[in-house]
Image 1 (tube, rainbow, N blue to C red):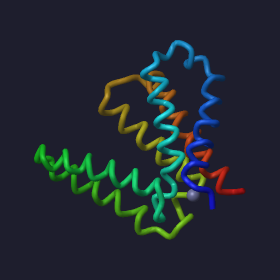
Image 2: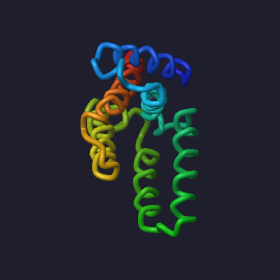
Image 3: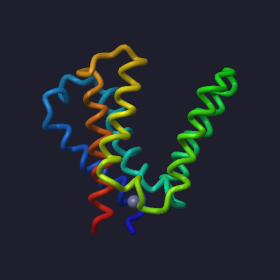
Image 4: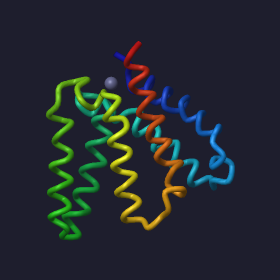
Length: 145
Ligand SMILES: [Zn+2]
């Protein structure tokens, strides 16, 4: 089983494919940095279903975001987020989080949510979607070996 360092290295390597797209050069450095962080996050995310660094990072982010929602008295959003977080933790290791369909659906779902709430155009958010897909794909490819 590949460790988190291998998955981070794989996600960074897969980030290299972003250079092939025409949007990469004009993207400002904060956007490029965000792409790399998103790829690394999704390179670790599938192992949220087992005790791992990815799970620790993911659950830490969840606790911070959920605490902020509770402090802002947005209890309904906090409850839905809590429900969504439990699903991968309850799954068996290398279950649905390690499926190619999940690799497409999870980043695409987040892309649609970001489109709805940010007001940005699909073209603006495309680099981040591709970064998520590449990071996720790197995890699945590495786990095959
Ligand atoms: Zn894995």
